[in-house]
Image (cartoon, rainbow, N blue to C red; front, side, top):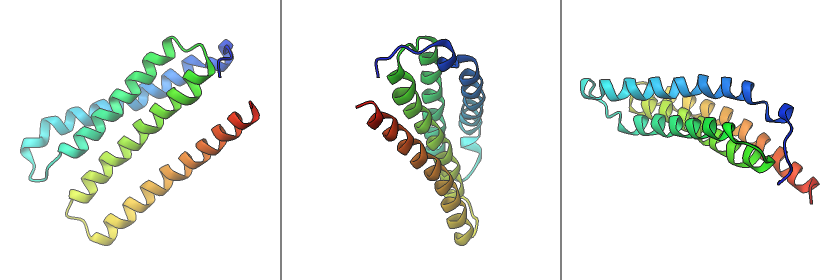
Length: 137
């Protein structure tokens, strides 16, 4: 994991573009929820917390891209933070859905679909990382 990465492997520009786009969602959502919290009946503290967590994780990954030199910084730390950030985005959406007045079946369907989508991708990423680390032993 202490292998030096070449510039192609660092792929800084493409990763920065993705991170900046996702940071925009997190930041905009956080700001919107903080501004409208007093104007709605439902509590938005939990969704605002998740959006802020997502924003901070994406910000940390963006900063990490600037000085990423070794494989462990990219594969483990950066990917882990991006997974936490994307899960926080989904959690904020689910917190809003659960607080809504939608039918319970609809809430369950949305929750299941969102978590299954994120979980499927997460399991694939963990298996690939595990396979990579096993091959390095």
